[in-house]
Image (cartoon, rainbow, N blue to C red; front, side, top):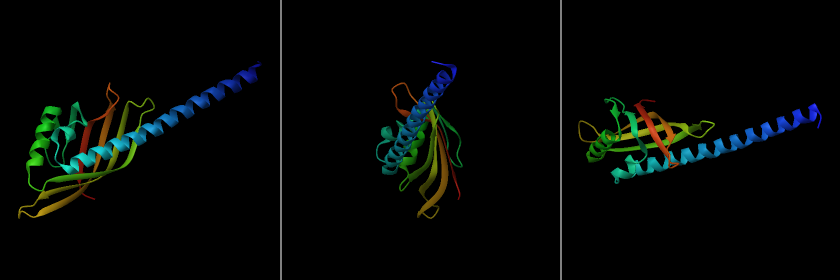
Length: 154
């Protein structure tokens, strides 16, 4: 094979490898979006504390809107337990965008959320906002949220 043929072959192999990486990344991005949708469904149901908390990594940090930072799964579990105990409290979110690193070990999702809580008069109030979650693929292959932040507002 001459030099031009070798260069063409190398370029073709490189292109095919890039296509395989892109296809894997697209598939992983959709898998991450689905994981976030499943989590939202579990949270909106608000019945299974352990199912909800299972989506966070053990070392996760959450940044609730208007509240102190919560670090670690034990503290997050307590935060969620207290939230679920508030009559009428509910959170829903809808992922709109996701991205995954080329090696499919890190990713993020963003979207809109709505938190429902009792207002000062006892009537339920709906607060709309936005969120961003950072995800890491754990050793077992599952995506776990490592940083979770949300806010209120348009």
